Length: 161
Image 1 (cartoon, rainbow, N blue to C red):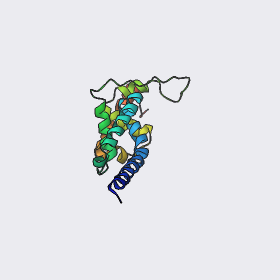
Image 2 (image 1 turned 45 degrees about the horizontal axis):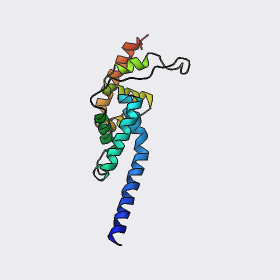
Image 3 (image 1 turned 120 degrees about the horizontal axis):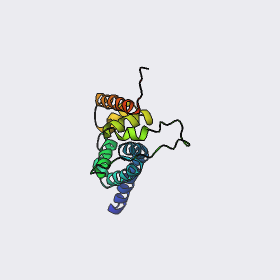
Image 4 (image 1 turned 90 degrees about the vertical axis):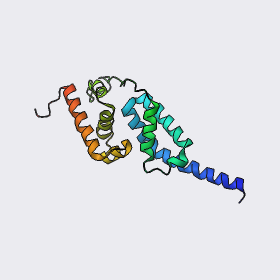
């Protein structure tokens, strides 16, 4: 095989490897970043993180948690932190959603909001969230417990009633 043919094969393998990763990781990465910074910025941050991932795929592919790393790349792209703007819930279109939820979610810390939205909004398990955020499961449980308590206080929900 000539050197030019070999480099094409390596390039094709690299492209296929990244494409497989991106197809699996993109929806999860987008959901997590949207939970952190809002839907519009979350999509842009996902695109930026995946572009960075492609540029550095040789190094990132070997990482233990490439999606967690790219989540942090996406979060750093949004720096400095911008005020989160969640869309209002139109009562006529989604009567099953508490209208005060966007404002209540915006009052949570970034970590609490990401954990609450991924666990209760998108049905991720705590291990998946821990892996994405690069923390252990007890830390996820703490953010979840505190985030839910803040939501209940803000929405004036008494679970003991």
